[in-house]
Structures are given as C-alpha cells and as structure tokens.
Length: 121
Image (cartoon, rainbow, N blue to C red; front, side, top):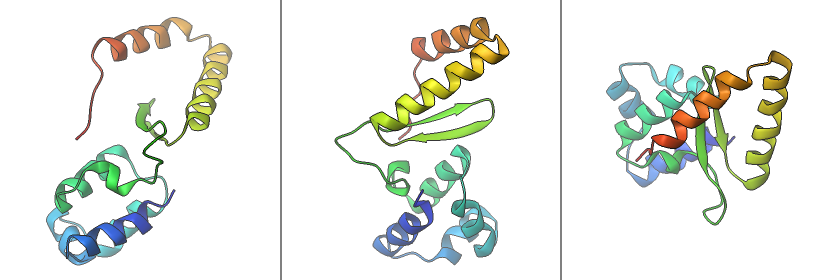
C-alpha cells in the first residue's frame, strides 16, 4: 500500500507539512508517518483525511474505474482496490468462516451491512 507516498503528495498539493497535520491530530510527525507506513487503521485514515481536508480516497491508491472499498472485519481494516482484491478477500474470509463454523455470525453481519451500508466521504 502506498498510503505514505500518497500522503506526501496530498499534503504537498494542499500546501501543508507533516508537522502541521500531526499537530492537528495531537501526535508527533514521526508517529503520524509510522502509523501510515504499514496497514493504517480506518480511523487513522479518516482522521488524517479530515485533518488535511481531503477525501479519504486521496490517501489510498486505486483505479477509479475499478472496485474500491474499505472493509473493517474483526478489528482489521482491509482496503479493496480491485476486483481481484475483493475476490481474494471474500475467498479468504469464506475459508475462515468454514474453519471456525461462523456462518451464522457472518451471515448476520452481512445482512446488517447490506441493510445499512456505510459510506465514507
């Protein structure tokens, strides 16, 4: 994931610095960069995007003609950037459900998600 690279490009575009964004978040610039380097959480991405004043999608690479989504499941954030990412995510989690015999739980979660989809700005 190129979140840190995208972050650098976005703050340059918005004429901001890492220090400015970190200050808005109440953390050090080093902590900010570290949190974006490897698998940032959805809440961190949202907080950073809000601090910059940009859409969250600006921080994540994806092909605008493809599928894009952010899925939070069991405390982990998964960024879906393509149809193949989506297929891999579904297959992986179907295997997990089968191994854990959690079909009922995940079916309930899926029904809840489909009834009230959450859209991020």
